[in-house]
Image 1 (cartoon, rainbow, N blue to C red):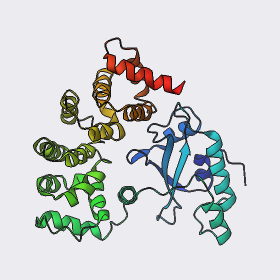
Image 2 (cartoon, rainbow, N blue to C red; image 1 turned 180 degrees about the horizontal axis):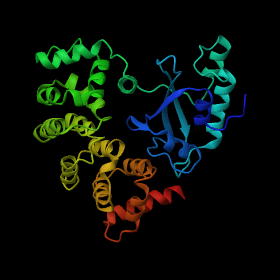
Image 3 (cartoon, helix red, strand yellow; image 1 turned 180 degrees about the vertical axis):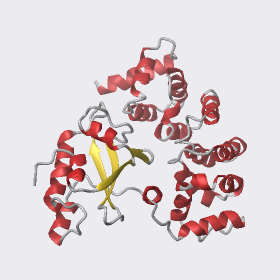
Image 4 (cartoon, rainbow, N blue to C red; image 1 turned 90 degrees about the vertical axis):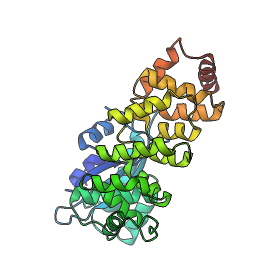
Length: 340
């Protein structure tokens, strides 16, 4: 087999159709063009998580639309660029195990080689469910049997009869959310925690329509003081919709408030980082963080978000900002002194 130098080339040479998804902070599509530039180190990985790129690769042959799935975790350097040696090692293991046809059922020996691949990992069950739903929607394949069950639950309005609902049904529904905007918006205020929690975990991966946004924001403002867990859950549901003016306004008010729970700050940095879109927002966030008086937490969150390419230059601007508080200046100084 010809020497293969990239994952994109491996998939292309095998005559596969394929799609790429980022699975790190939330689930998002990666275009083939962007991923090719990432592999060439022309672009940093857009959403690094714990120092790695977390990828889902769905691929299939034209005659068989049922996709195969690989879950790949590849290390990144401090600039977010792909570790070329690790990527090449991953490709070499796959090429040795499967050769030119990636969609064949592997023999026992090939299975052993694939299992020895150190870059393969297993994502959480909720991410697997949502990814399966997104792929099913993208490829126009049938939904799971749980989809109709969840739709019926929302229509019947028997809110406490949730025990037979499957998470896969919730994620199938969310993948098709634009078809059910009004039904879900009307149901959101009444959903019990056991349903709302997996629903919010699925919603974080979709850009939401207006009626859903309004329902979530109304619930956020009415119930946030009663339940911090519920507030965090609802905040997370807006992760892919932070550019909407109503959502942006909510985060602006939140970051300007004097009391923001520690878990909410962690949620913002981990899921809703795109609201930290300018130096002023970053400063508000860092000031709230530093006033938690938790050095370990401050250092961990700073190191996490400084790896995000869109956030990195804004953080450096904050470090040079002479108007930052003395407390923040000390925290930043201690952070960099600990690394020297």
